[in-house]
Image (cartoon, rainbow, N blue to C red; front, side, top):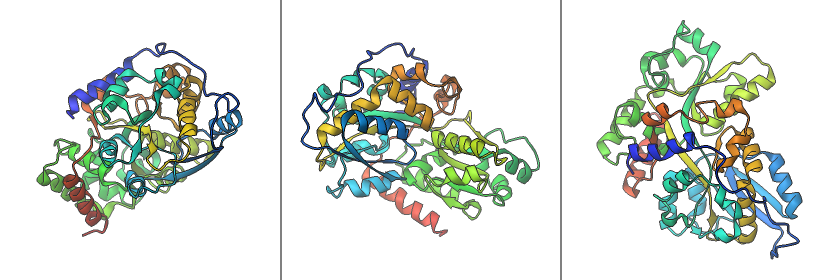
Length: 378
């Protein structure tokens, strides 16, 4: 997958008017559609759904939902590839989808059971087709960016100035800055497939390269700042940033905005700014998919359809502060989110950014091995 062509595909998501797409009913009533079970087991990212929309789904369908959480694609994949996940719906990222489909981890979706499928942005489906030919398995849920956020007061104090570096990624990759910020706390993703491409991009290399020397160069660059990194986490940074326990965090744009909102609600004096570095960010798409061992597939289709209803997608989007796959939902979202470049990136930012793409088995193994060594400080 070429960075430029994939970024171009996503530009349409930012610019496309949201009046398109046929709006249909949310989900069928349990009284009008037979199902052999009243259960649904979901395994998803933490803080990735408005509980109110989940309650509404249960009330309208009389389906009892069990909702469990993971905080990295690696954790999800480890459970999926056993073939005994115990779940009916999961939400992997685009970088993992192709490999998992080839491994036989999923069942095909039945689009006839998802009337609201028509609401999905066509550009998003076109991008997903690169890893899921014919869009047979994956139904886009949310998309967003891998970026960073700062605690403005702590960063200003540590750096001795309000001025941030021209390339804001220097805050987490350049020893000149990390040595100063170590005192108030820096966090990285706890994921090789999320963090290494950001480092490659910072070095001016192809973020999706499979060249072992380039991958090693990115890890070696991060080894220089490893003593300054306080935490490796793909979800815990939300509460840590909100509480003022970190001053800089690499994370998912929506999660970082959740941290910002929590700090504001707590009125604890923590002022968080979610950055959208003009040098570029990582772009990802998460999709709802049905594992091969799923037992409640009819209910899984009902829930997918529910999430694509414009009003439900907008409500979830406002809650999790990510861009929903349902195109007409954007017109229903709060303007403070639709106008935020860390949630809906500008065309200029998209032009400088990259898609986090699938890796070969060899490249993935090398990345994970080097990543574990980096975390261990070796």
